Length: 50
Image (cartoon, rainbow, N blue to C red; front, side, top):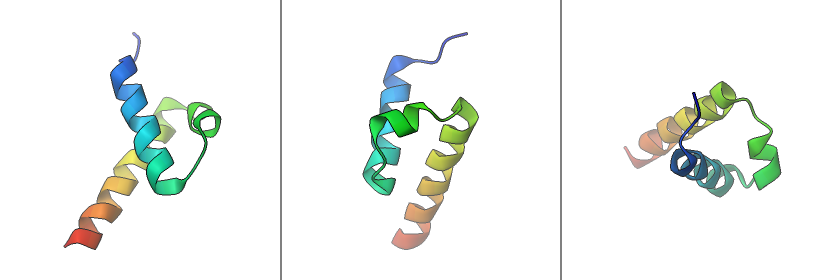
């Protein structure tokens, strides 16, 4: 099963924007690690807005 390219680009942009990490650093992450970071960022953003 392949991961949707659009979703991958969204994850890269999201992590890069919030953590200021480079494209290659983010792509080097395993899929589940990248998803954990996007989930963690979303949680932090939600708490900051609340």
